[in-house]
Image (cartoon, rainbow, N blue to C red; front, side, top):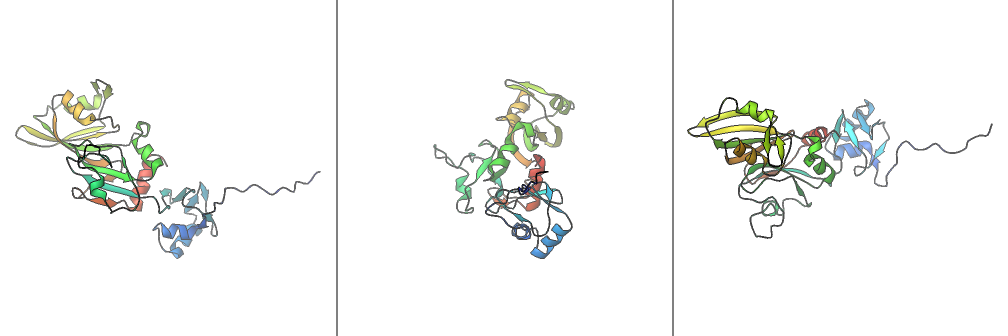
Length: 256
């Protein structure tokens, strides 16, 4: 029998920027190197789908790392930011008409150049995500991933009891039907009502057009969540970096 002297193929490529896995995990904020070594020893870390072992290396720019089943973004060059966009600000980094834009609020706060994930029209306010992770941004915006977005809207009242059923059943607009995933009345004040809607799509002005179609035009619109990320008590015009857990939750929302 002819002997095969060829070397076995490596299970995964080792990139030039690869470092000891525990060092990569520690740099990403998982814990001390000793704690990260313990995670690896206990088989709680995978790299590109394979259970990691002590002594393994990884490149944060190329390898996909999970800890306890949750995706870890270990590339420190990537940033993920939540912003509470004020009303009257256009969702762009460079507005040719000279209007107040996102760049006016970001300024020198971020060293990296970031892009907005989706849009909020100038008259709307609330949660906006900013990142330089183009792959994740694409998935968050693509309708096939059906990432839920929740809005708080002030609308003309009173609200009929069957409006929620009508919205969840679907309403026909000029560019096709739309249905909400959930709807509830938060409160009423005189002829104005405050309602909360959750949708999994992001067509232009979709909430305003939907509520106008059913006879309850919107006077104020605030986006309060995108997938697992909540606006919370973030003040108007302020930014904050997402935590590792929040970034992992975003990856989970798009199936990564």
